[in-house]
Length: 281
Image 1 (cartoon, rainbow, N blue to C red):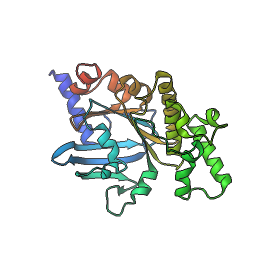
Image 2 (image 1 turned 45 degrees about the horizontal axis):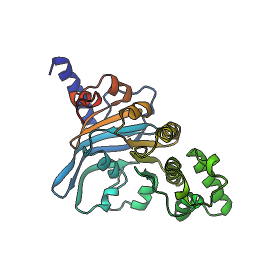
Image 3 (image 1 turned 90 degrees about the horizontal axis):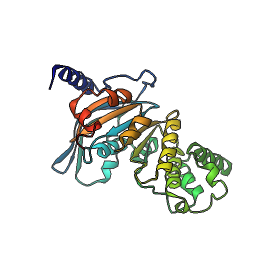
Image 4 (image 1 turned 30 degrees about the vertical axis):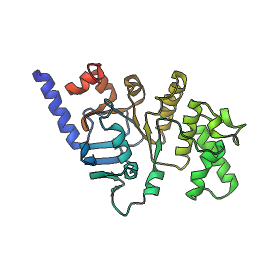
């Protein structure tokens, strides 16, 4: 390893230990959304995350990249305690929102998951009407009371998800009757209907065709004006297109966290460079 690469890696490691990106995006918002420090996770005896420290900024898209099995989705699930549903998981370290550790015993997990919504890899609409897919959770969380309020919220969520014009005349048809891309946008509408602060997306376009993928990417760019978005992707081009910041994971470690343009043009670590240029992964 030459001296220049060694110096760049030293800067990257110092930045990662502080939880900060190596290079700041001057156009990005830097109000803190989620602060993670020294996060470790085990599945039984197997350690899947190792000393992860990262600051996620509000109203940005942060992409998590890295080879399969490197800890990206595991990390994502730590942010709204979805890993609690997996037997044998043990977690140490800090995941903080608004000065509170989300893993503290007093944390209301239901309330946390309302604030930190999730969109999964495969579209999973409820076996309900399009309308009820969106209206159900806000009603359960007492976000709406009157029917008129509910109608207004459903329309707004579907508009924000770029789906309203396609479904406004068939709101009472099953959500499962929609195409794959439409179903994923319905799931996004369902997530944003409860007015979260953060939206987690676990490979949200991997099961979609290129046209639907482009639609979701455009939607992410619009939604970041309202929400913090953290997305897992194996698509390097997608990360380059949609993300303000990119975090590269490898074997459970955060190797580099950087402004996306810098990550893809001048990565500060050899491992990130090798992965981005296709030498492995």
